Image 1 (spheres, rainbow, N blue to C red):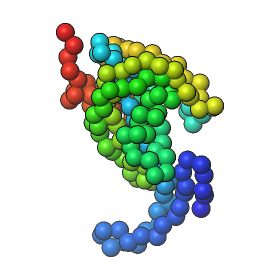
Image 2 (image 1 turned 180 degrees about the vertical axis):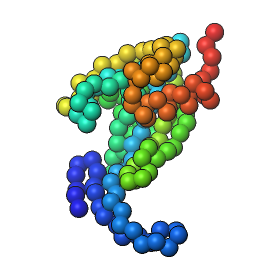
Image 3 (image 1 turned 135 degrees about the horizontal axis):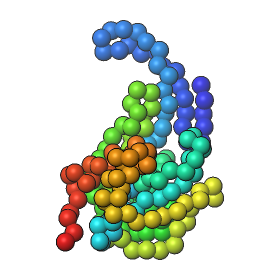
Length: 169
């Protein structure tokens, strides 16, 4: 039905597991990666960028689509460098999920990046990105008060803080 630069849209006629014939419109997406960069002192890096779909700026984690024939980890490394200028010595995959499985095929792979080294960012021409480090308690407050509204970031940060964080003395 539609072929775009980032996704396609198609209409499928399917037989559901219960035997019902149905028509499903599907957004076909190659997948994406998300990076939660953690500084040595335990602060987390977020980026702020304009998102046309919501009509404003959002604070969020580093993220981007997986390019054709690209594996998730190299894509994560590429996006971290492009958007923040940072590289990481250690990578840990913490989540592999479908953010909106009702009508989008996108698979999202989420990594924690540690052992960060600063460098020069190389954002795409249409990206105007600010980078800032936050204490986990500040980000938790933003989540509780609705200031951090990006779903992938909320999910990844809460998962990290609950199950993965190494407490810094």
